[in-house]
Image (cartoon, rainbow, N blue to C red; front, side, top):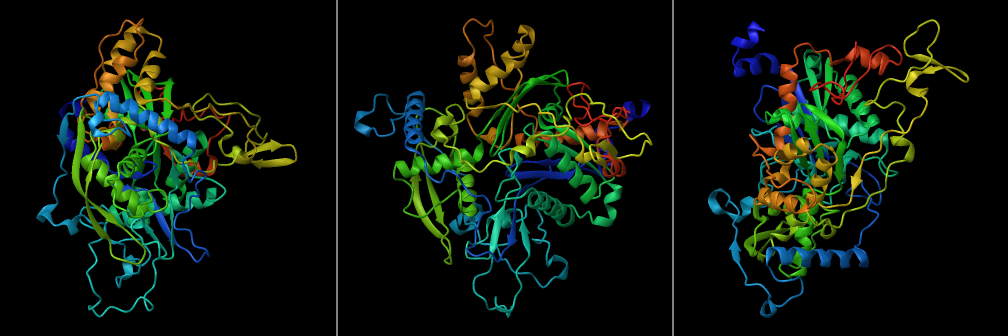
Length: 591
């Protein structure tokens, strides 16, 4: 305790954070870095593997709904008109002469690139061939100064004396942003191991492939970006900051990757919501995490997660980007080019950048001059000057999700989420072998490893709602049932995730939530607290703080214990969630 009274925060970070790796995996991106750093690396969470499959698929995922249905189209148009009336802009098919509201003109301009050269904004195709450097032959990408995973723009021409493409060897796999920038002509297939907040397991993407891809991506980042080779991993510990959407088996699988495959000495698991509260120095808050593909709402009281308040919404930033494309096409401001955000990853990358640069929430007509790029097979990127319009409509889809028509992919097998033990509940005490041997339990036809012999219990269902963001926040907070806590939470809303950076989102959330509170509730004040750091990195920062301040390490799982025993039934040791252990980790070994 004397040490804690005298040590300065920077010294504590340097001393205790140098061998702690914080891993915050998401559907679109993974935040990863040493706990002593101020910010993590933010790497697209995907991998492209070389394939010889014929016909070749550019993307592993196979859509179930490639076209918008008539009913969805009607709902989308109705939602647009509702949003238009709120923003005081013309309706979807209304001529300017028939506008019912006086138009408010607004203009937004993206930050111009250095040098104001339009070619600097173009997204280059990835060089898929191995370099002459032996150390980077099969690792997926060369390391760059900023750790973003991007390679320099390829030089035009081929006058450098390099061997022709027929003599060069393709990289076996490519990770990060480079994986998104591969031409469809190249023999590669893009895989996203996490989709919509869950492991992306389907009939087209097996569990083994998903886990192998997770391992490959994380291992590539550790080696090429953090420079932690396999031989030194036993000196490091990992802090896993997992989404609330993860189910029990998913948590176990990623723990196995971290401890068994990546060879960290110890690991601990925290939930994003709890970590976010600590990341902003709070103890009580309603955490609203607006990610790329999933939005989750959960309440924290005095450092303890309230599980009954958790709500998952099946939309996020990528849906806003696709809605941006739809609105421009409807208003005929999009160039006549083949842009496909679902099957061409580089197009989604471009749309995300346009959304981040131009979309905001404000009243009146919001327009902007922009350069749109076309990425066609086998030709250089094209440049198209245009004037984007209705740029305040797509982000309002958070409150009116009917305008965000979600993509639908095949679900995983039903048995996948029927886990054998709920990591968030008390241990079930089952009979063990009389000889006390670790890891084996009696079955109907002999003894089996305990992973194969759990009685099957239905896991706690994850709530997934089809409502707007303001309604979800209101429903989550009111479910606490205590007026004093409700008032505190309504004045302690915390927006995290990349979409939280959208200009005008905070006042829009405050206004819509206030209107969503039923009139009979004695609550008349709402407030979104300002984030102390980049909202994208708040959960990662919170995980780093929790790891550094955890001096007892009672909650940490040792590699040898996990590989040998997993969850040891009936031994009195149990991984518990912060529901029971205030401000402690989600996987707690009660020893």
